[in-house]
Length: 285
Image 1: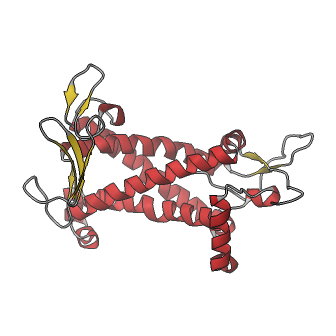
Image 2: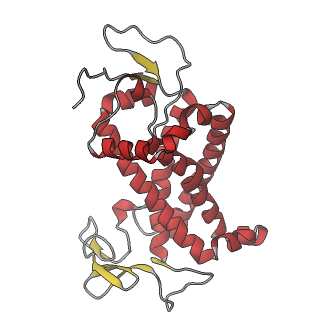
Image 3: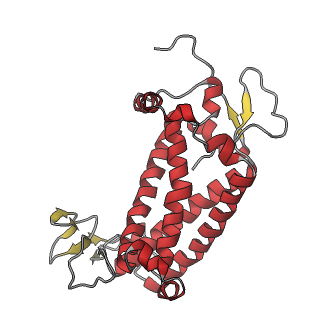
């Protein structure tokens, strides 16, 4: 998740024709790459945990005889995904698939998508819980740095004019047409970027952490208000699953935007901090 920071850095290296700005400070770059690895490991280990019971419910309770709102399963010869009453055949992908040795398996998610690659619930939980601590500590430190260091105020704060429906609609149209900002504007966030980053950092990631805590019986005893807040342990599990896939959707859109905007320039800025401003166009279409 790329974060843009206000220029305040060591002198830029000399350039012949292009202008560079110091876009990403060190805490942003560290958090970005640590978070990328952490979320990937947590997703893959989470899919292994989900394989132990690939069904989701609302409320306090849920077991095999109960009706699930979402399920991945198999019959004697097919795999399927079910949303409510809608069933989609997924043989070969989910529910029933063939592993690298040619053996047919009936886990919900295939081995290439999970950590570990063979079924091991205990190992999946160990991976997941270790990186959950990495996520929680990293997010807490990054939030504090964003607040104290002024990153939130300078770069993510949504100003009054940006809430204008016309302004938002213009940003939506520009993204749909793949018209990316140029010049000085390229170093700043648009309204859609601000909303998406704020949503991920201050809503989705904390939601993942607190729903994960709610699923722990020990935390349910220590903090019973979590069960009330999320409507029960099974509801928390459903919300956790939905939030995880919203993060996946954000990641896919983020990668697509990086590729379309110029991957080398974007990657350089997230590794070394310096971003080359795209030159202004003389005539806009």
